[in-house]
Amino acid sequence: MKDRFIVSGGAQLVGSVKVNGAKNSVLKLMAAALLAEGTTILRNCPEILDVPLMQKVLEGLGCEVTVAGSVVTITTPPELSPDADFDAVRQFRASVCVLGPLTARCGRAVVALPGGDAIGSRPLDMHQSGLEKLGATTRISHGAVVAEAASLRGAHISLDFPSVGATENILTAAVLASGQTVLNNAAREPEIVDLCNMLNEMGAQISGAGTSVITIDGVAALHPTEHEVIGDRIVAGTWAYAAAMTCGDVTVGGIAPRNLHLPLEKLRVAGASVETYDNGFRVRMDHRPQAVDYQTLPFPGFPTDLQPMAIGIAAVSEGTSVITENIFESRFRFVDEMLRLGADANVDGHHVVLRGMPRLSSTDVWASDIRAGAGLVLAALCADGETTVHDVHHIDRGYPKFVEILQNLGADIRRVTS
Ligand code: UD1
Image (cartoon, rainbow, N blue to C red):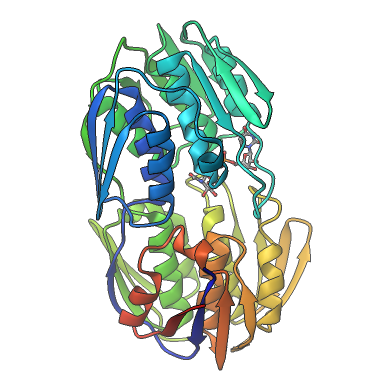
């Protein structure tokens, strides 16, 4: 079914919203449940399409999984199948995070290579070389990555780049390896910290999570746990930018503001008033934003997943902004859709120069990935007239109750199911 959103621009968003658990955490935590026989319970899970997809992957490996609202319960059997269901895995990239746990538990993992991605090439070389350092052999065979290891042993591993996915797969294999693993240039994202916290609750011995050197002392076995997923900083950031772009006043709860430090700082520079609390923040804007430059970098840098929101605000700011994408080379495809909305944007390699306009102008636009889709809706809120955003199934993969939340904040938006 191809749903679309109809958005009429002009409303100022006002109100409060509580964010769900992080998409980029929950899927990895679900995969981590493979590491311990017994029943793991995850709370604060987002009600998004990727969760039932991951449920299917885990069920194919032999787990029993129930999803009841925001609670996911996973019962992992003593013996797992090492072959992840080809079709289920190919549907979403994050499923590759079963590679580390399966290699550690079964001594073998066969995981289909995720399909092409609209945001750019996403190789697995660092995942593979990390597992090889731990003693596995890996190869690509018939469209799947195959890892095999009679046993895993701790090692010193240095990543060329702080890849989130490679850090996760190395962590979830090294927890059950014999001896100590030191992972240098590890990703520092809050979702990595969440995963390490859960693994430690399961009996793992990990230190240094949130820094670029993570040390893992392998243990013989892990036990199941009950864990609450951290708030989704990208969803929280989306509402923060929506508030600033529409000259609104939005309070966002369920998120540690330190996980969104730079995006909120950028909004301050753009002229917004930002108050932070223990578990949330408030963004108020009472005039057109000022132009600000952005460059995406691994955490604590500006997140690539908020780059469409940065382009969105730059498109309606006073002055010229330069936005630099350093993580995914094809993410500027989104700019073509912004041009349809009348943005004054010029792409030059991995930079885009935007001269802000007071208003954008409505038309039909197409979402190409989760974040680009959300960015288009934010831009449509600043466009004269009625914009139709097509292919919104992408948005549904990452944003629970997207339309309802925006409606509650005063936006004129509705879903049309065809
Ligand atoms: C995760 C997030 C995604 C976010 C990204 C960067 C999930 C499900 N997705 O994706 O939303 O945008 O982090 O914050 O958590 N790379 C290699 N070889 C590898 C692995 C990565 O070259 O083996 C490159 C990628 O092509 C990319 C960069 O490293 O250019 C970053 O990728 P990575 O951090 O691994 O992102 P993901 O884990 O795929």
